[in-house]
Length: 175
Image (tube, rainbow, N blue to C red; front, side, top):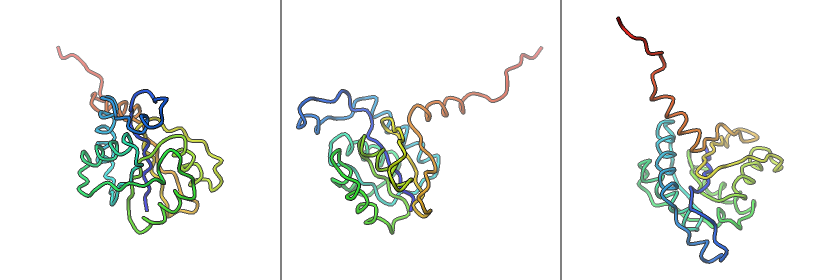
């Protein structure tokens, strides 16, 4: 299985009240990040069988926007194992539940998402991997230990798109 771990896109400033914070929506920048990252997944010809998201609004919106832009027609599944208070054991159970799928996109939150990623690829949680908002990591779960194949954030994606659109040859004048 290829496991794609994605941090939810930009949702503005965190709120003091936990109930209000759970209902925080994506801002315009976050929606643009979702479209960009879905295009990156399409360009990389990623195959997604299932999308699973945290129950919090910003993660669910991220999963739905990426899925829609990516062309995913099934319903986004929701799991508390990707919520901000989830622990690694619940996350492992979730991954095991989808072990027969070829590609699984899971959308969650920091700090637990990057801690889960570190534990998956090292086995002991020794790796600290920074995941900016809307970042996506691809982990090949068939390797032992699982192998981090790539980690792309919206900044890198924008930079790559900008460099590709420019001509690679220098401009010359004809006289």
